[in-house]
Length: 287
Image 1 (spheres, one colour):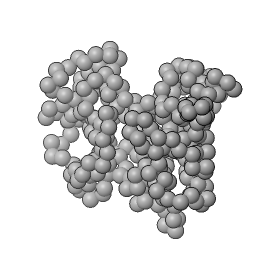
Image 2: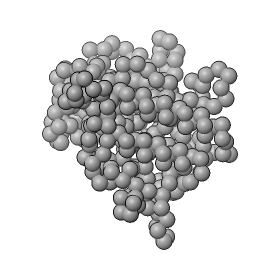
Image 3: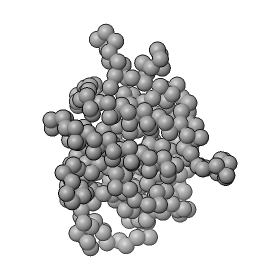
């Protein structure tokens, strides 16, 4: 069990969704600003999303400047709290996994489980907000393309398929910008739909490749999904399609309005009469 004294002081809420709440916080010992994501594991769907994020981020053995870094993850139930690790087999952790696999709640809802993710704090919002509040810049476009390409290559080398790459899930960090560079640092985040691919079935004499890991669950966000994702048979190349959508939308400043949130978002599409259709869906219907 971890120390009962809290290591972090929550300063303010900076984001909220159906998945969880994100706070700006400070590590009490070092004074370093961090982001703390609190996820209430009250449904199998929330448990699965939280565990996917944990499995992906904890499987990375080295840090990359353009991928969000998981400092630690704490599993809490009532007054009990324990630090999660990649090979965790504690009763609390196993109950969470069982909940996800069975698709049903196996614990008393009055004694809710929470997962606390401690990660990099990004002070510049997301990529959508950053770009759409500024005039187009070739220098910024070039910097962002290089950073995103580097991040995605790193994730794929580490056998991680993101599956929900979009400007909303790319954070801006001004504090991490290298000295002498006027462009901010991007960090790919939100790994709740990610898939860590097993290489055990591959030929050990061949280099591991995420493009030999075939997936069938159609998931992600419509406007960034590749045709093969809509079809339900795809590999990590779907991430590259999403990256292409983001870059195209960034360079041309193509946007649409989300029906639910009324938020303006970067993304490409095909116009069919008065309707706009995600590019991947349109390509599947008519290559």
